[in-house]
Image 1 (tube, rainbow, N blue to C red):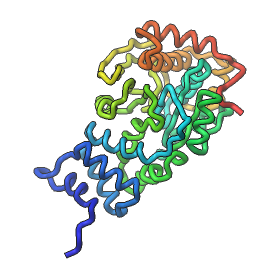
Image 2: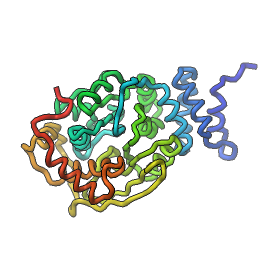
Image 3: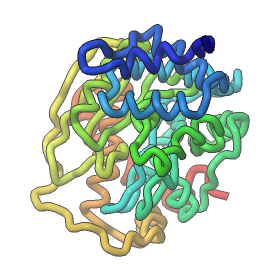
Image 4: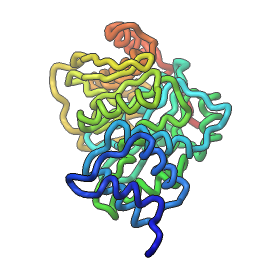
Length: 332
């Protein structure tokens, strides 16, 4: 009899049938993922594991276990510090990535923003590195560069590929499997630098509670998660916004009112040059300004920099208005 592979137990737990299969515990998800990150599983096992996880949908305990093991596999420079961990894993297809301007405005006002994300996993979308390039800001090539940028410029962005080739390879299995992998959820909770405040978004509202509970299991002190435009951390100003949060690791929920009274049309051109024009003030756009300031306000409110929604929105509007328009943080 052939000896069973150590990883087979985790595939069996997930796939033993409708009556005998079950979700993984936090400890099992952590152990399984540690094996994956160490390269101790066969390709067929990894594919089976990812598909079974996707079919049933990840539980908060599984997400926390996977995220913890993945985080432990990442290099973390000892001198790196971030005030905000900002997940950018979706890409944009209907509106420009205004969240990039929101993050840069926060950075210009002294808040250290570390952004990380996956790119080019879905056709027809604009990704963070492309938006930043239009502003003259390059992505970091590694975590040591992240530490330097955060120290000198208060902003750093790194792709998943540069941060972890192993995680990037797993994310890249989507075209082979025909399914999105759990990494689309897990990546939003990686928080590689252990920032006290993390902000992420989801396309589908049911995942918000998963993000909140998984982050609570992981001991995250402060968190904000909401249904963002296109799945990115970006306020949809024409709609009310339901934010799930953690404050000192305790869960809560707040509803933010809409900022605009009329719907926005799809941006048919997605001209990235408009981002620079908006930053410099060459272009004025009420909806874009509401999106940018509204996104900043959520970050301010739940990172402890504003005591109420009204205070957060007022401060965000002032910060966007008072940005130094001649300089983009991190631009060459």
